[in-house]
Length: 397
Image (cartoon, rainbow, N blue to C red; front, side, top):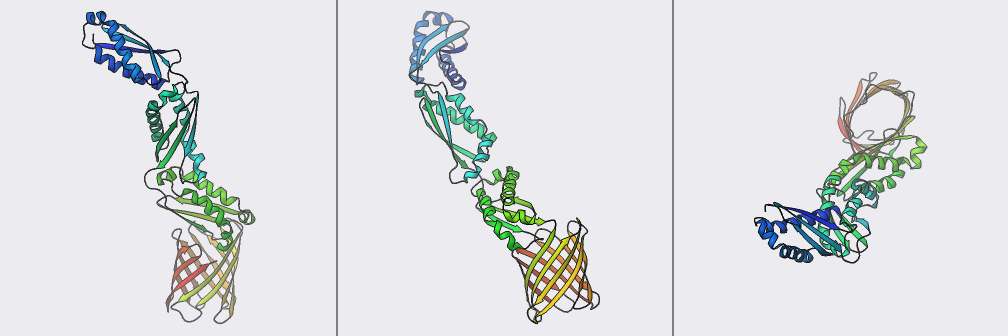
């Protein structure tokens, strides 16, 4: 005899994965006992072999009684094993997911990723004798790990099973790989004073904090979801509706995650700045208000009002600007006090860098500046003129 074929029978069939494991175990034992023996030997000692298989599996199959073992000898010997569960069987399960110290706000997203994992576990346990749940737990863990490796690869799992007709399962998820330790939030605008955005900062900060502790890879995979959540949270704030702001959030996942929320209006541009020049003795402090109205998608008319505390002078500069490209804006303004026109250009090199050029042909005076935004309320600019250079610190109010 050189082959064994196994059939498991039961009035209440065991779950498919359990039946598969039973069949594999019976086949292993059957092969060890029968393969290599003569057909005459098996036919002569059939009852003894049946008793041996029954005795082994009555010990191994906890939760089941082996009611019958039937051998059908041949070149391929068939082994029929009929089993009956002890006592109660599992009727239903409940799955509790524990995400530890992570924000509860990410639970919906995690559950969506996990999909029908509860059904996968139910397929293993429902119909199984309650006493068999403990040894079947290994299969449940394998099912969950295989499922999560595909659907939620950024977490590993730990499983606790409390067996009963209603079996309770606690699934603990533990982040793997690099996790987010810090979230830097920046609210910026080039069309309204930053101080107005300060009102919206607390709820946006709360939404951003839900990223703490999450795996970087998980946030990267769901960047669109988190971007939308932050945008929707900010959009609910009254300041957004009041000024008709268009919100553009950018999430850059990492151990130190950076979130930038750009808030712009398409109707007006209002900028309030205060500056202090270091390395310059004359007129080294300045307050400036820029109030502009967009007359089209690329054009703006404005009035700039400057106040110099050192000499208590006021300057008024009406002007016009045109957006030539997404990064280049230039135009003309007129200094009423000096009775002179000023040509100006701003070129944005990135989210933090700007090049500025102003030229007054009448007085043959120009300023060239390179500005770096330290954060939403403070910038530094190095100013170059024909006669002197200085560092300017600018408060972006």
